[in-house]
Length: 90
Image 1: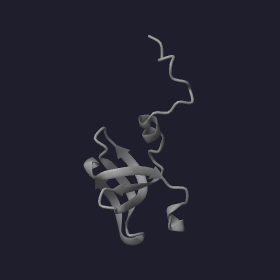
Image 2 (image 1 turned 135 degrees about the vertical axis):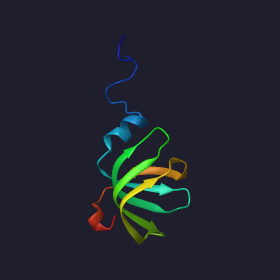
Image 3 (image 1 turned 120 degrees about the vertical axis):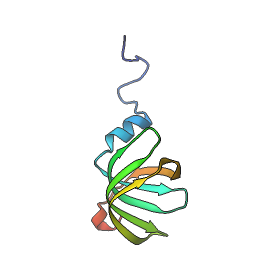
């Protein structure tokens, strides 16, 4: 079977994006407005997220630091890659 000739090599799906950011710094924004910043360890089809070196930000201010964190997928508004390192206070 062909590899789906309609898709160009430059076409990226959301699943491709999520695979490509594993092990990289991310920001996870929850429906409540709270941000979690850390290293994306893994995620599943329900958008459940495991993170390492996690920092919790409320209204842009650091509130807590966690070694590892698990976020239930139904609370996630979005996942974004960070442009700056976590040490920069991104």
